[in-house]
Length: 382
Image (tube, rainbow, N blue to C red):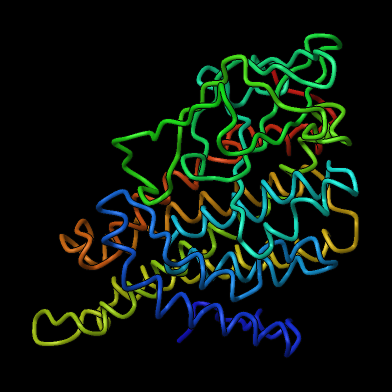
């Protein structure tokens, strides 16, 4: 039985269901067979990009009122491979979202069509080596204008897709007015160096990089014209933070699918372990986490399309759903016993990847404080 126990997918239109089904089949046939090998080798399978492009789903969120469909697509990707889902989310959500939200009409026309076709892959560089949760006030990367050129200096860390991206949206603080501004740095720009981060224990297929910017010269034409302060950056993060809540639903749904199938096949004491009370209890608790979280993100998508979507809405969903995800993948590992820690049965990969999804796009603690500020009217931030 599907992890979508209450048939939330039934809320989609017939056209949207067809898009989900096409994407699900692509993930099943092209991504699932190579997921473990790519993860083990910490290599990105560039050959799948063409198939993703043919699905024509990049940037769907910016084509008008498609938040529910976009959420279901993210969930389906994470259900198979959280690393590939993260690659796509960085490109379609963060990078394309930055151009769509903060670019001029000319910039949108220059970059978005190629990014939608996935002829050009994007990345998003905000987090820094010594700054994460405090990035709003602690951004150290600087931008200095000289005529029609901006000089960028600084460092970024954990930047997904950055080792091979064609376009990297870099956020820097203008030395003149102290405002955060966005710049599109194109591949091959002198002074831009992206170095792959090695030895990760999660999302190993994602090519995260350390970036250094040394007198990196970016033309004024590549400054995102409508990015005038960190509030604009935060608007993008509000959208993608909700997307990470959807991702966490997909991760726990994938782990639930695997644990349920395993429990039906694994025989102990002369019968499948799915027939034991304690195993059924774990499966039902997993399904409860999936169902509650899926209901939350479905409503979140409705709020987004209704235009009444606030920071605290996405923060609560991200904090709650990722916490439930952590529980659920742990229960899946428990059902598989020792087989839950090897790649052969897939669940071990979900357990490891869940740790990264739990932390990025704002930690549970920070998202709790954002929500707490909204419900109390008092800020507990330092």
